[in-house]
Image (cartoon, rainbow, N blue to C red; front, side, top):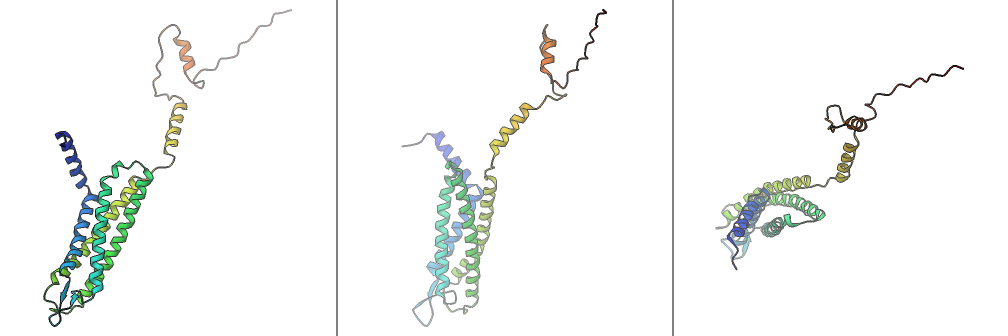
Length: 233
């Protein structure tokens, strides 16, 4: 079943607009960096030494370092895919509470992943610094790529946390906003007309009585009391 050209063009324009958002760009970069980290160490991160056929991690022969990078990169990649799919349907979420909870979860995970990659970058760089030169024939480029992209991931996740906190500030509900608006309407209705505001007066024989009744009682001139003459006896 083929969609009409107008609907297909609309879907394409919405997809392009979604991918151009800063949040979507950050998600894609996070996914690419995480994919590079765990795939590079998963393929070339374990090598054998020249004197033994047993496989070791190229980062100072510490298997914990390679396992940490592979596991963190894989989980970060899945997290990016999940949140990218949720971002695509964020506009369809009608519940304000669910949207606020989603944005708060996004902020917490972004801060958490930034801390994880900061610790991972320091750990991987330290293990690579203590590695023996030319201990492995292959795998040095993969180790350097994992260390470099773990550093780049810190910056991207910090930027993602900044975008999440901006969304929370922009979409935060204002309490009693409706009550304040209604109170402003009531005060505007009950306020007396100012001197600068024009008063539309009808023309006709009854215009004088209408104008006197339309004006505020504070603007009318008080009448002087009448003196009654008493007849002489």
